[in-house]
Length: 420
Image (cartoon, rainbow, N blue to C red; front, side):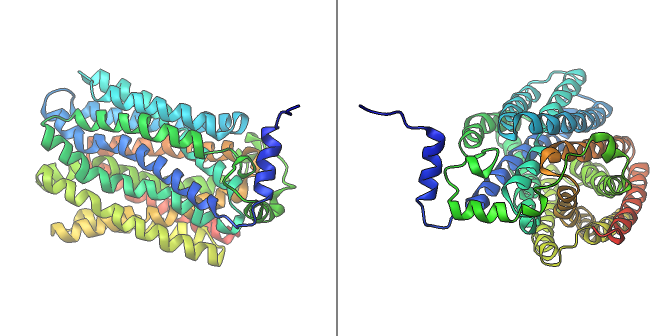
C-alpha cells in the first residue's frame, strides 16, 4: 500500500542528504536586487518623463512637484504598515501583493490625462512601493548572519543605484523612439507583472529553513550567525520611539535621503532649466551619480563588515553629501558641477548599507520589519518636505537640503560615539 509523503519532512530530508555546501542566500540577495531595480525604475521614470508631460500640457510644474512629494508621503506611510504586515504574515506574501499593486499603478501613470490624475497615480504608487524596504530588511535579518549583513544589504541596494543608471538612457530612448512619454510606464508595468512576480513566488521564502535550495550546511551556518540574537525579546513601537539612538539614526538617514530624493526627482529639470541642457544630454548626466553610488556601496559594505563599524561611515558620508551639493550648485563649469553633485548623491551608497545594518542590530527578528518600516517610513515623510521645496524653488530647496544633510551627518557621528 502506498503512503503519503509529508512535503515538509521530505524537503528537510532532501536537504539533509545533500553534502554539498550551498550559498543560495547570495542568489536570494540577487533576486532582491532585481526586485528593487524594477521598483526604482518604476518610480524614477517620472524624473525623465515629467518634463515631457509638462511640455505636452498634461500636467503643470507645481502639480508635478506636489505629486512627487505626495508619493514620498504615502510611500513613507506604507513603509510603516508594510513592515507590520511583513512581521505578521511574512514578507513573501506582502512582497507579491506590493509588486503587482505598484506595477498596475505604474501602468495607470502612463495613461494620466490631467494634473489631478497624476497626483492620484503617484499617491497610489507610493502605497505599493513603500512596503518594499522593510520586507528586504526582514529578509536580510532572517537569511544572513550578522557579520554578512552590510554586504547582503549592499546586494539588494544595488537596485537603488542601477535603477536610475538604467532609467536615464533607457527611458530617454523609449520616449525618443516612440515619440511619447507614456511608453516607459507601460513597458515597466509589464516587466513587473510578467517577469518579476513569478521569481518572487519561487525564490523568496520567508526563512531559509523553508527553501529547498538551502543545504543543511548553509542553514547551520546561517543559524550559527544568528545565535547571539536568538534570545532577544520583542520591542514595542513605543519603546523604540522613546530611544535616543533610534532618533539619531532617523535624523542621519533623513538628512542623506532628503539630498538623494531631491537629486533623484529634480536633477533632470535642474539640468534643463538652470544648465540649459537637451533631453538627450540630461539622460547622460543623470547616470553619473548612481554609477559613483554603486562603487561607494561596494567599498563601504566590505569595509563596514570588516571593521564592524557602521555609523561613522553614515555620519561622514552625509556631511560630504551636504558639502558636495553646496559646491556643485555654485560651480559655473558644468562638468565640475555635475561631478560634485554626483559625489553628493553617491554618498547615499556610503550611508545605505551601514544605516540598515545598524537598524538590524537595534531590532530583534520578531519585529525587525516593523522597525524598518518605522525608520524608512518616517524618513520618507520627512524627505517629502525637501523634495517639494526643491520642486518649487531650486535656490531655496538646495539650501534646505544642504543644511539638513549637515545636521544628519552630525547625528550619525553622535551615534558612532554610542557604539553603532
